[in-house]
Length: 193
Figure (cartoon, rainbow, N blue to C red):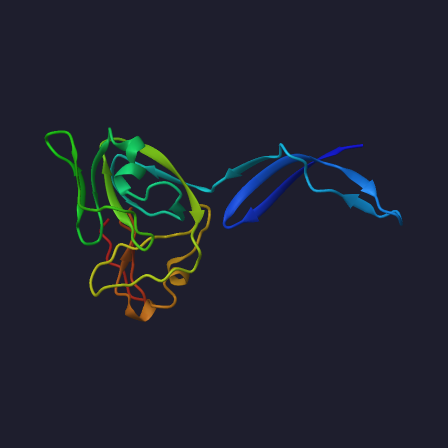
């Protein structure tokens, strides 16, 4: 009799599902033999997705995938264009809507080694399919402020010491999009209440 099998495998950072009918039988000594699938096999590949949820106002974002489609930032943020106000990178190159309604794109393609500031007029989210980033990634840091990504899935929780362990001696200050500040080396915090 023919049996139906369901296989899930990971290949080249993608998850694939293949449904097909296999012919089974036994060889001359009674071992189970599974023959290759016949024609008509269906293959569906589902790429991982980065879900980027943003609030109205300023957001600090990055991706944990390399986009499978265009890497152009304006293209990737297309579902948010009705509420998109500004995007800029660490060099303050900007993506913005001109008064004429078209876009001025000084940012260009998404860089996996950068984070981006995005200002929205209202909340929104975008799903970006892609291949998982090969970690760790090398990020060139320049003297002064850098906007760096957190290229891990959103459910990964790491403290700041772990993330910056290799360079902590060179870090003066780190802050996140909520404005929380981390000062390495047991330094104190100034707080207004």
